[in-house]
Image (tube, rainbow, N blue to C red):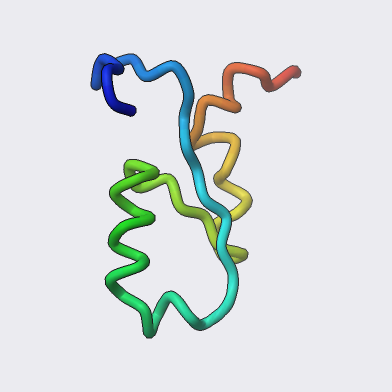
Amino acid sequence: MAGQPSDRPKYEVIACIAGRGFGVRREDMKKILIATRGKVFTLRNLDRLIDCTGLLNFRTR
């Protein structure tokens, strides 16, 4: 993201994760949250992936 305007990056980074490891490895989870600007999805909230990301712009009705 270096050199990108903070309000208009060229791309959006998201993460989809599963498993118990991130509950234990809190520091790694913190890094992922920062890198993705909070756009981390699990099986529990995967249904919100399109509504909460730039993918919403590609939705057809």
